[in-house]
Amino acid sequence: MTYSELYSYAKSRLTEYEAMCIMEDIFEFDRSKLAIHGNEIPENKKDFLTAVEKRAKGIPLQYATGKAYFMGREYFVGEGVLIPRDDTEVAVNECIEFMTGNERVIDLCSGSGIIAVTLAKEFPKAEIYAVELENKAFAYLEKNVKYHHADVKLVHDSIFNENCVEGEFDIIISNPPYICTDIIPDLQSEVQYEPKTALDGGNDGLDFYRCIAEKWVKKLRKGGKIILEIGEEQAKSVGELLKVQEITQISVVKDIQNLDRVVFGTVRK
Ligand SMILES: C[S@@+](CC[C@H](N)C(=O)[O-])C[C@H]1O[C@@H](n2cnc3c(N)ncnc32)[C@H](O)[C@@H]1O
Image 1: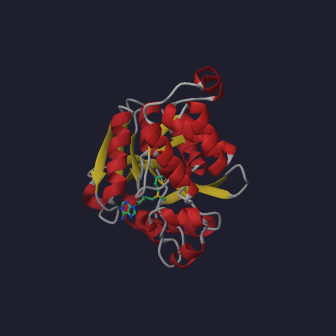
Image 2 (image 1 turned 90 degrees about the horizontal axis):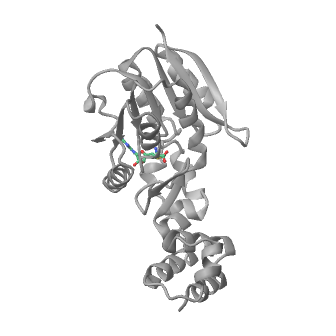
């Protein structure tokens, strides 16, 4: 089969958009390359057809191709690691705004590593740590850090063990699991392919925020920042958890859909 025939086949099984995404991810082909080389025969036809079949079965596109994109960079993903969401840009942009470049920063619940890698690439002199517990997610984290030649110190441990990293930090950033346990079965079918361990924030969705407030805030330097991605209805509860600790100037940032997406605050000087 030629590239054009493979593309036509993919379009017969999937949407045109999905067929083109798989062309791009597997063959690095865009529409203009397809027009020029459409009659040639690719070597990795099998990878393409496997991705099409996976997607046709309802497996998320990013798991089907093994690739996802975040803030202009490509990441390896697959079953066992959360697919990066554009929503997370809100937290990362807040962090970038605060940073001068010499900070010691920790990304808790790092998953594929999108937050830690972005910060390490934007601020090569900063000292960036990434903590991830789950084995499969940690393997993707390691792979993505290597792929981007990012200077990130990897910690394979639970954030419930705050002693897994020593010393104080200027910034704590996290997109932890934050969905209430009971709601998970009702989420859309594609999300069911993602690891529950990346979604489940306990009965009220706040287990990880409680952990971060109680165990990690004390590891922030005076004047240090905490930046937490949240579910759209969690701003008030997360803000209250931070207020009990030494956090002031608590603010909420909205995403492009005007939903609360990030809570951030500063440790009293
Ligand atoms: C919502 S995902 C976020 C992943 C990534 N930061 C992102 O924004 O795409 C939460 C991550 O927390 C990890 N996780 C779950 N429990 C953990 C724990 N106790 N300690 C460290 N990481 C944990 C999950 O494996 C998952 O990768």
